Image 1: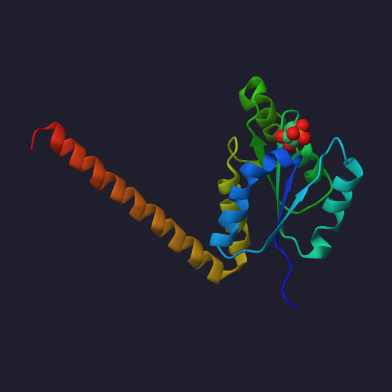
Image 2: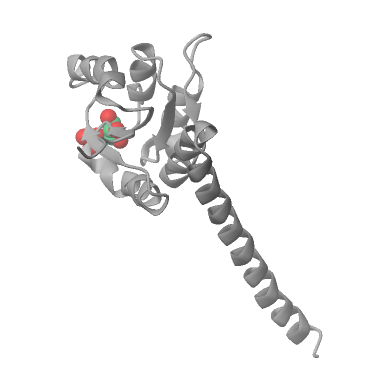
Length: 171
Ligand code: RP5
């Protein structure tokens, strides 16, 4: 039997999907299985609670929850599970996203949500994989390769910048 999803990606609305697809893509790149569900803390509070309560028995190990505006979804999920919850504040037009960021980051003591930047779905996925990799050498190796790619990309950017520097110097 194929293993079920290990990371649950949740979002308050399908209007968050364009941003949250980046989390799914990053998990694909790193070879980690995922599922994606639209569940609003305000419009379907009972569904959110059931999702959080049943997540461990369904094999989920880390939850990523995204919401914009009065962004209560990550906190409400964290209230009903001991799985780590990573919150993604979605940038909406009102208040420049500060409402979502503050709603997610400022959790009360005892109920943490690991908050990433506005629209930072990709970072949320990478952080989820780093959590999973704690007990998994093969996954850690994949992350090390991923970091190696970042390093090479940065070196390439510097090489390009140095070409520009040489031109500015008239060399
Ligand atoms: C939040 O309200 C959602 O996460 C979304 O970011 C925002 C707007 O939702 P819709 O009105 O587009 O459904 O609950």
